[in-house]
Amino acid sequence: MELFTNFDGRISRKGFWMGFLGLIAIVLIAGWGLISILPGGIVLTLAQVVVSVGILYIWSAVVVKRLHDRDKPAMPWAVIFLAPGVILQIMSMFKIGYRAVEVAGVQFMVPGTSATMVMWLSMAVGLWMLVELGFLKGTPGENDYGPDPLGNTAPREGQAEA
Image 1 (cartoon, rainbow, N blue to C red):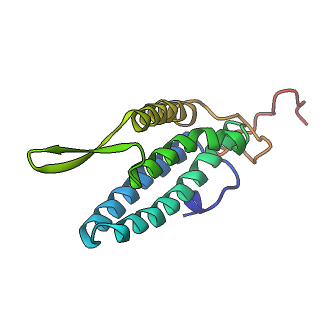
Image 2 (cartoon, rainbow, N blue to C red; image 1 turned 60 degrees about the vertical axis):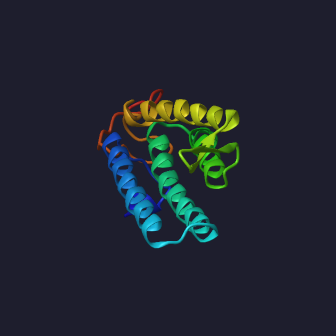
């Protein structure tokens, strides 16, 4: 549970992927639950906002700890990695940059130019984040954010062994 609630320390790539998969499960369960039990309109939108803030907190904890393992400060990297997705979620929930299109008597909300641009930016940054945090190795040994989550005790660059 500390993986999702604490911003201190470091996690390995395995911890990152476990957090990522856990978050996907939470999103799917919460999404299906909200859609199936809540009426549409403002009630659903408010529930989406509350759940989205909770999911953002959980994901931020995972991202920050993985950034720490890569020896990167949480600010500004967490903002760079998370902001496009947050902006896209806000635009989607409140239909900002979307337009209504009717097909066979059914109305759909379709992203316009601005929403599409934010979507592409969000996807590009998301892929960059997955490579940076999910595939690249962390800093070996202890760094400013704590001990190596893999238990390696290699000295930091520029430090002599005691």
